[in-house]
Length: 418
Image (cartoon, rainbow, N blue to C red):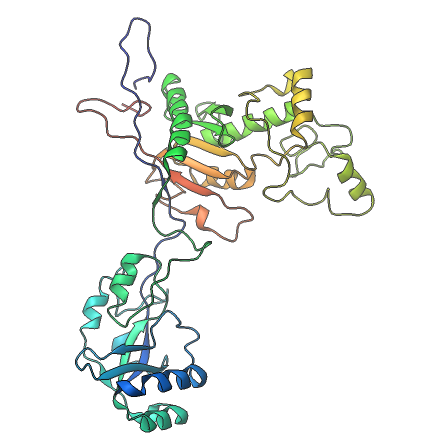
């Protein structure tokens, strides 16, 4: 294993270069499912009146992404209109569905098989299968060739999906709203990339210098100074993975800046079930004490994400809890109340966290996790599992992958096992 530092009398090694960091999708893309549609053709002049009436009598509330009308592809004088959805009228061969809801007629995560499905001949539909109101509307406006056709049952999440799915029946493309689960890898901007690279280089240097394959750094964005650092310690203890170790260092730092007081917790109590002086023990501000005395909820509830003042960016790295000093007390006083664990912090780790570490980071309340090396066997944040996509957890964080540029021919990338 090579070390990314200048050895005495040695040559300057090449700088660590990274690919652009990308946000790791929090869920896989939706599979295409289709819905059977009753589609009829009408003279173009009847279009406006027909659409107004259908909007009242048969609104497509669950399929607003589908366009209600299109020009007939084989006759420019006709408009093809969706009269209604027929979820119970689909032939088995056209809409067989598996247990997970994916349509048997449309395969492929991005719906690439939709083009083939679009080429199928529509099936003639008896007028009697329509509700009475739609039968009357069909006759009143001179409807012809009533057919059963298919459209996407869910709106597309990506542009590629839209291009494939709209071949079945036209879809209105809308950029997904904020809060929609991420389904595509999204690159970060240049400023974020520089910030990520600064701390990831430090983690890689630590891993290489210790001749281990993993190390982690915790920082408060956008500061370039680390709050906590740790290397993998599984050779000493099976639970001391780099991510777990660095959270413990950050907790020790907090205890040094905000020492527990006699009123912080009684024996057997703690913010997360720990005893006095444990990781869950925290000093209780006077206003919280008064709330607790009055039966309020201040001391009994876990702080929500974003509560508490930010910590000073230049507070230092691994601080020994027993070494708290007057300067640390002054820094704590200026910083305000102690935040809950790693709320608002970023964690940089060389190797993708496993399930245990990923869950530990949920409970530590980190804001973002940035890793360098994917772990196809144990990785829980994009490779083997996507724990950050589990919305039932009480906290979720964003995940980014920032891999190293390939090493020169014949070389081994620093920070990786040789």
